[in-house]
Image (cartoon, rainbow, N blue to C red):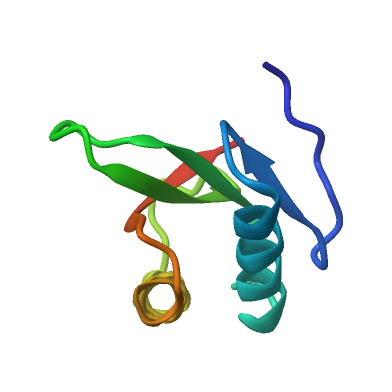
Length: 103
């Protein structure tokens, strides 16, 4: 499934999700603030983890950078942690995982 590249204020949702969850995760994504340098898109992918529990994957679509600076790596880590914290404090039953994919 091809997912369109959206602007920095948009959030892409992939997978089966209720309308309420879609609203919740879009709000979490928008409240997270600007994307880190080199990140072009935020996606949430929904499904079950390897244990069969409900899960959400925070997917950051970023430039392919073989040698990112420490500051860039830390910025991405902080952004991801912020999203994970918001998800865990929300009413969602999904466990947050994160990944970075490159373009």
